[in-house]
Amino acid sequence: MHKRIFWRSLRLLLVVALCLGALATAGAVGRNEVPVRPEAMPVADVPSEETSPAPTQEEIRAAEEEAKAASARQRRASGLLARRGGLTGQQREVLCTRMGADEVLLQRLERGELTRTELTWLGIPNARADRLDRYDAWAAEYPEDSPETTVLQVNLDMDQDFYSLIWETADPASLEVLVNKHYALPAGYVPELEALGKGYGSGSLRPEAAQAFRAMADGARADGVSLRSVSAYRSYKQQNSTYHRYLKQYKQTTVDTFSARPGHSEHQTGLSLDINVASTRAHFENTAAFAWLKEHCAEYGFILRYDKGKEAITGYRFEPWHYRYVGQEIAKTCMDQGISYEEYLSLRPTVN
Ligand SMILES: [Zn+2]
Image (tube, rainbow, N blue to C red):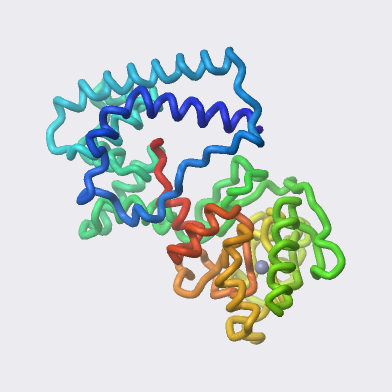
């Protein structure tokens, strides 16, 4: 796992060094043309040496080969794009990098299949190549939106009603997994779990999250604040029976406002928990524990997952008690910028 990450990082570094050196020294990203909220974009995740074994000769050779191939693809793209008008320097640069990493996209460019509008989308760092039709549809409906806004809105799935188009997440065990009313975990997914243990409240979390929660609760205790889990991991089966129990009492549209459908609860990831309370009536937002969490949760890798003002994006009312483990780096970005996890992922560049 670490080896693979290291290998990928090495390959990326080589690609960057070989192909973007000139652009970088030229001050690649024009200040005026930086897309929406660049401050929210994460720093490259390069693992430390202690956790990554050194790559083998074979891996280094393969990385060099790939870097050369990417560089060649970038040159092909650059030649073709030079003949297309109406693109800014930054768009060209993003397009070249994108085509360098994506042979299929480059072939489409070579066959003249990419329209000018499609090139506009693809020239935005956080655009997703598999959503071009959806960007087109959004732009047709909201012509006043800038291309950057269009890309962000579609990345946030704001063009889809909740539960209307459901994607099953490809990598449920990823610490970055997104689970919401658009993305579901497979029914059979069960994470590795660890009990939170005596003094930390009820339930289990994935080991990384359990450790982080205990550290956070210890930190809070040192400041005179008590944090206890009242609900952590929930299985598909549990979520399924809870949801269906509510369905006997209320209409589905009502149930959907307060209970996640099976597969769609973040508690099924083993990375989320409810702290101290789990009810709006408790007004947890007025407690010292909430104030402490808001200030410190990111230091332990947690985010306040369903914040006030983000309901249209997250699909949930303000839940001051619900926290999600995402790791310190992402947590700091989200909490410092005041952005939801959906926004963080939607703003993240898809080109390296
Ligand atoms: Zn919760």
